[in-house]
Amino acid sequence: MTVRLTVVNPNTTESMTALIEAEARRVAGPDTVVTARTPSMGPASIESHYDEALAVPGLLEVIRADQQADAFVLACFGDPGLDAAREAASRPVIGIAEAAMKTASLLGRSFSVVTTMSRTVGRARDLTRTYGLERQCAGVHACDIPVLELEEDRDRTYAVILAFAKNALAADGSDAIVLGCAGMAGLPELLTEQLGVPVVDGVAAGTLLAESVVRLGLHASTHGELAPPPPKAYTGVLQGFGRR
Image 1: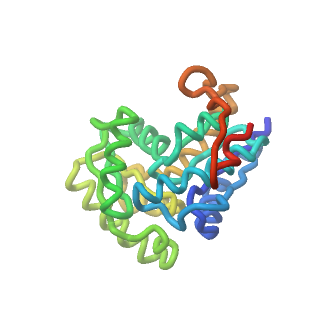
Image 2: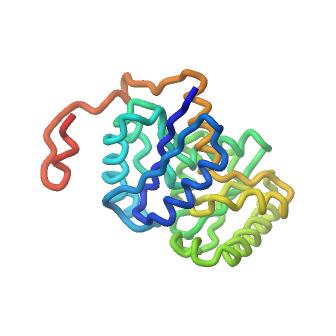
């Protein structure tokens, strides 16, 4: 059975899309075709509520145009526009924050999140409540490396994240680490070896979860709240989003 997955990088930085695609392909099964997409519009990185809001039209444009994918992975730890994407896709859409945190909750009694900027800590906390994982999340720790700097010096990035993860485990008494940015993809194996606890990357977890849902023959709910949005007129730069 061939599974077609589209991984959407909600920001517009092509090099990050390439990193995300490489990690998704690394973990996907041999019969899974992974394609990563970069929106034609939106912010270069997502580090604020403003960035998240303005990333949503671009990622929805990608999803609406893709009729071949069996499922989608939304590769930003804020899971921006996840519910809207599920309405638009009518196929499974997996957010990497939800995938990573739910996977970590299966591996121990608690987990800690190590993310990028301090201003995103509240968003991560909000998501733990949304996903029913507030009790399992022992802490959220920001290393204050801007998203686009994660790629510039991977050795430095690794050293900083390792240090913050060690401190998080000690401070929180947690059993696992969740990496809070798609730009941290590719680091879990090294970190797991050094830390001695499970380290979960949302890109990998989201890819395998999306693949599993498709292989189980399960489909996204398309009734009630997650039914396709009703057709209506949109104006201005959003005019094209009203066509169905």
